[in-house]
Amino acid sequence: MTAALDPYSVRRGVTARHFLHRLNPLAKIAGPLPFMLYLLFVRDIATPLVFILLALLLITVGAKLSARLVVALWLGLPAVVAVLSVSFGLWTDAARVDDTLLLFQLGEYRFYLGAWLIGLATALRLGALLSLALIAGLTMTGPDLVRALVQHLRVPYRIGYTALAAYRFVPRFRLELEQIRRAHRVRGVSGGRGPLAGIRRGLGYIVPLLVGAIRHAERVALAMDARAFGAHESRTERYLVPFRARDWVFVVLFWAVGAALIVAAAALL
Image 1 (cartoon, rainbow, N blue to C red):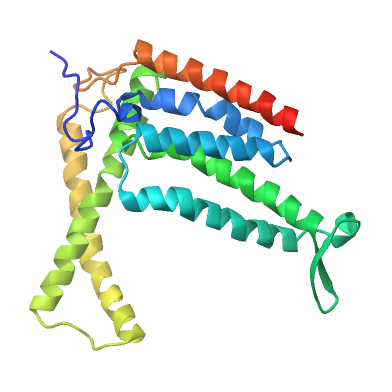
Image 2 (image 1 turned 120 degrees about the horizontal axis):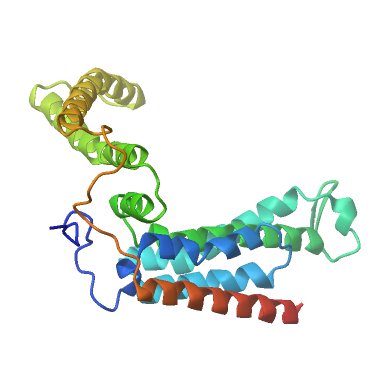
C-alpha cells in the first residue's frame, strides 16, 4: 500500500491556516509563473508593485514564517528595492531623462528624477519576481517538488531521484563539517587567530570532508544498485504528492486575481 505522506518533508507546526504548505508544489509554481514571465516585459511601476503586495500578503497569510522572516519580507525587501532603484538609476543615460527634475549633482554627474524612476521600475520588477518565487520557495520542500515532477509531469525517475539524493547530501555534509570542526577542537588544532588562521583551518577541513563525501556517495550508489535503480522504465511510489481540487482552485484564483491586478495597474497609468 502506498503511503500518502512523507514524514521527513513535513514542516513542524504547520496548521490548517497555513494552506500554502498543503498545496501541491506544481500548483504553487503554475499560479505565479505566467505573471513572472509577463513581468519580464513590463516597464511601469504599478504592475510589479501590485504583484509584490499580492505575493507578500499571500505568503504572510498562508505560510508558516518566523518573526524575523516576516520583518525581512516587509521591511528588508522594500529596503533592497530602494537601494537597487538608486543603483540602476545611476546607470541610466542622463541624456534620456535630462528634461525631468534634477535630484542632485556630483561634479559633472547629474541624477534626474527620470533616471530614478527607470531604476525604480527595474528594481520593482526584480522584487516582484523574487516575491512570486518565494510563494513556492518558502512553502515546499525539495523532496516534494521532485516527487511532484516525477508523478505528474512524467520526469524520468532516474533524473528526479538522482536529484533528490543529491539534495539530501547537503544536510549530511553540514553535519560532517561540524563533526570535523569539533574533532579539531578536541585535538587542539586551532591554528591561531586572525583571517589567515581561519583560512588554514578551512583548508584543513577540505580533505576529511571530501573523503566523507566520497564514502557516502559510494554507499548511496551501492544502495541504489541493490534496489535495481534504473533497471525499469517506471517505479512504484512510496509517498504520493497528489494534485487535488484545492490545487486547481488555487491556480485558477491566482490567475484571476493576477489578471485583475494587471487591468487595475493599466488603469492607473
